[in-house]
Image (cartoon, rainbow, N blue to C red):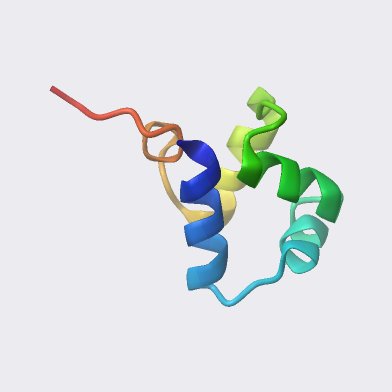
Length: 66
């Protein structure tokens, strides 16, 4: 779920994977892997993404409230 959300957020801002990777201090390859969900997000990366896009961790992780 987080992969699609991350990709949608990135595309809404008109960013390439490489641009987002630079802003989040990671690699383009990791951004691709996050979007494909072939690797899990670390707690630190969840925090960075949420701060960058000004979203909650619940939103990024696709957690819906009751």
